Length: 162
Image (tube, rainbow, N blue to C red):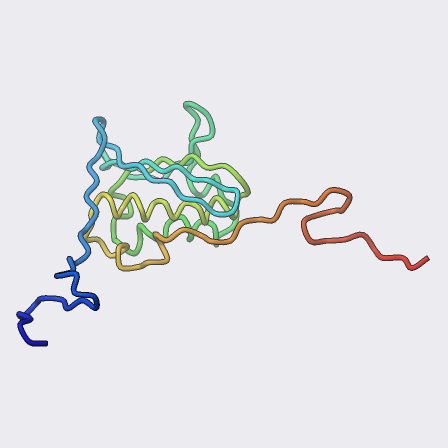
């Protein structure tokens, strides 16, 4: 294109240069925690993350002062790997203290803990989880509501002609 310099983006309607996408910069709160929220159907997981002072664990908060580890909380190995996947990809496993408060079904809770990837993205914008769009994009499916007079959202009682 005539007049376009090297590194300049051309636009269709002549709107000028387009800016490259900038990394999102989020600082920790006053106590040093990075926060994120993840959702899957009706399950919501609230994650807070901080640099570890020794052990570096992922704990699920059941009550104000009661916590469970991932192995105690989830019985299925698939759910455990869903929770630990962002930490293994980035190599931060054992270096951060992560506390998760989750509600909903167990499998959905494990999938909602993708919020760990969001918190890692805020902690280190150059980390590898930023390039994995599925780890930080929201789920689009939502459970259907149960219909009145029927056993479920889609299921129907057996049809009888007479």
